[in-house]
Image (cartoon, rainbow, N blue to C red; front, side, top):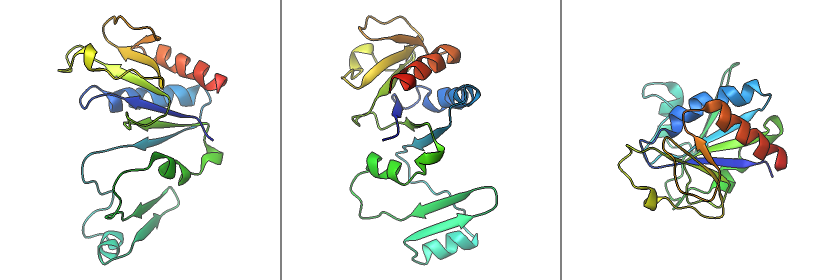
Length: 168
């Protein structure tokens, strides 16, 4: 199976901000990352008034919108009780990827880097460090028994991920 690495933290800690910088650093190192982003919001990638939106809303269970530049598959899942990360990964074309980065899914049994910021409104004691946590990226020094990375040092985090990826 393709290596999965989750970037997990509480809302507002900077997961997306970190990934926006990390993905180009990994690409520059020759890594082809995919991404699965979890959201708690009712999201829609299509726009009201567009043909694909109207056809999907008319009852299509799946809608694939394609152009020369990209394509997107939207699947309606009103009866699904929970998101299934393994299933979502299986929908990706992993032959074109070296790894899949996962934003969120902090309770999944996959390798993860936890993020912690001093001003996030949470305490260090609230961090759930289990056997899947391979490192913590933080803006303060923490008393932990796993590797700690500087959340503001993208090159350090990227190098750590490259070493982890090589060991997979």
